[in-house]
Image 1: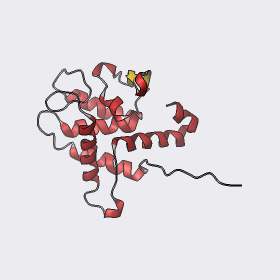
Image 2: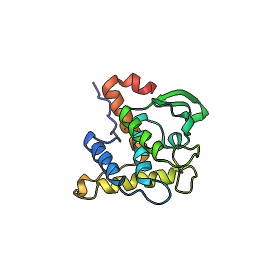
Image 3: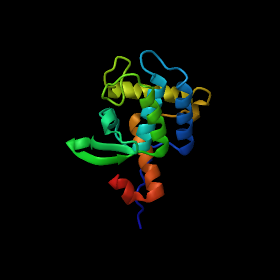
Image 4: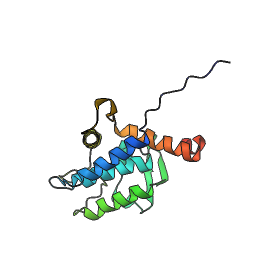
Length: 171
């Protein structure tokens, strides 16, 4: 019988994920101007890897939507609203550190140094900085190619491997 073609997976390997997370932790040492950019970027990476949200959904979040376990009333693609989006425990730890370090009361969860909501382009640049740090001392063939959407693929692949494809599809 003919076999079905298998699609190539666009997510990160576990090793690449560990390298990215370690690079984000390293960049936390350089806080940046105005806001703690290193911690913010690490929190953004953690939220994208730990929730499976699209980058625009994550950037649209406000502080009040974070419950300590996940997010409530999240507007997703198509204008629909998901009641609850759980967040992985390790991601919650990083996000809690980011919220504790913030000295402002601006509603957006991820802000720039001027206090406005981060854009998709700024988020992609932040993730690119983390990838550049992770790629710093490795051979060219081992470089990580990453975008915010690749982090979504990574989350969904891990979820499918641990709980099944049907569960990941629902998520």
